[in-house]
Length: 215
Image (cartoon, rainbow, N blue to C red; front, top):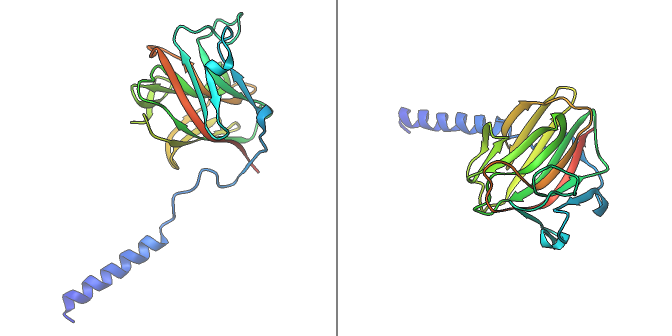
C-alpha cells in the first residue's frame, strides 16, 4: 500500500476513535426522578362563563386546550387575560431543583400567547414561554426555538431555585439559560394564556406531561 494510503487509513482510525470517545448530549432527565401524578394534579382553568368541554378535551393521551381573544377570565373577580391552562397541583416548591417535561404542539395561526409558565416570581412568573408568529419566545425578549408550528416538540424546563437559574431544552437540546425572578413558591402551568397581539383563536396540545425533581 502506498504511503499516502497509510496516512488516510491512520487518519480515519483517529477520527473514528475520537468520535467514539466524544460524550453524548446529556438527557435533561439525568439525575431526576419523576413524581407520581394522577388526574387530581391537573387542575384546569378556563373561561368561567362556558363549559370546560368547549375549551378543553382529553382523549387519554393528548390534552387539547384552546381559548378565544374575547373570552372571559377564569373567574369573575379576576382581571387577567383569557386562558385555558392546566395548573399543576400537589408539587408547589420553594427549594430544590425541579423539572417540567411535556411534548407540545402549536397549530399554525396561534400567536400572542403563553403556552408554559413557571409561576411565582417578582413579576408573578419566573419564566413564560410565548408563541409569536410560529416561534417560541422567552416572554417577548428572546427567541428560544423557531418554526414550532404543526409539529410535536419535547419541552424540558429545569428550575434550580437555590441557583436562581432556569434552563429550557427543546427536543433534548439546550435552548435557553436565564436567571430566575425570585419568588417564595413556584409551580408549573401549560396550555394557552393570551398575551399581546393575539390571534382570535389560540391553541396548544400536550402529551406525556410529567414533573421531576432532583434526588
